[in-house]
Image (cartoon, rainbow, N blue to C red):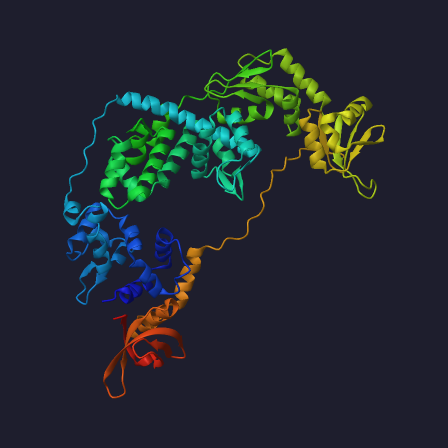
Length: 596
């Protein structure tokens, strides 16, 4: 008996959400699916059934393999998608489709468990803990701090300059080198940080550029405990239900290979795909300090057990306390005795360049960093007031001198946009009251591409845009300030590289849902609709079939034919036995079967 019509009817009853979920999780090719009959045919293929069975736990598989009716209330019936494996008889009894039973019956030949083995509820043994729980939490604390500070440094970098992604995957070499140097990590450490930051919604891949999202700065301004909690919660929410349920059950038992083996036993059809997802989840847990060396720590219990200590309290024990103070040195260096409070750290990065990252980070003030801060809206007074507030060593005289001198020099050079009408062939200018500084600027080899031309004793012009001129001179460490057409200063924002806008992508799943709904009608549930579908498939594939035709005298005739076309209610086909072409009224065809 062909089971496709019954399944097609059931598919029509799904909500659009469940239908989209079914297609998203199972489908890779949509071109051959035109209606619910096509979809039902695909779902009864062994490959599709295998993919569906891979998501079912051992008790559900044992029930399917037993050949017994599915009792009401069984967990297998809770999911609309799992119910699609079952056929409902006239008496309302649910049993696996014959195609499903045939696949499960063939499992032993493929190295998968038989019906009797599926019924065996003996779980794989779990190894005993071979390390002290305190050691686990100590290692987890180190990893939690490293992961949180690593993501923070990555977000800081991507807020300033996005990183390019290669078409084949991975960060482009120049940007990867920049991130490795800036973060003080190995090249292999970039991808885990990118995945973690993306999962938490702190960065995004737009076009072919990794850049920080709008939530990045608010996250950076959170205490470290809140930042880590955000990352850990994002890890938890990204877990698939099957893995999340097992890890929750094992919140006090070893993870690692034990969790992998348990999931492989519980989901015997999961295969390499399940194993890869489990490994990725466990690697993320180790990286974040949720587990350590294969053992879940206090963080895992806080995340997975409702009765455990609150996650915020656990985070307080994992991460070192933050300090709002620094040591400001005469040599213009700044030493942070420990992790800085977020607001101090973010402000300090505006005024100085970070030189070394760690529990005790170091920064350095320079004329360029102070000039950059002044361009961002700081003043000498606000900078010195901030240093006086947070420095445990006061504000050394060399620092006061550097800030005061940089402030005095700031604005000696002013840049703006020229008027094409008044100065044809130019787009930007630099002016200043010091002709000697302008002369130095004009002959600086690093700025030769600007093509600076003197158009007055105190003015240089360039054919390049203002933004290019301003940032090249800024990077060359000249005390330049931007001004608008009225001569008023303003702080320009360095433009980020813009990725080529990708063409709009049509979601194939949603498009297919719409297509299926348009093909659906009450007539689809009739025997005539199924006969028409079988004939259309045979026409497309040029496959011989046996058709039963009701004759005018009440008799029935069977023909072995190869369909050629189906139009206007008539089937044109080659009669394989008679060697002639026949045209048969579709309404007279009572059944379609395989060639015999």
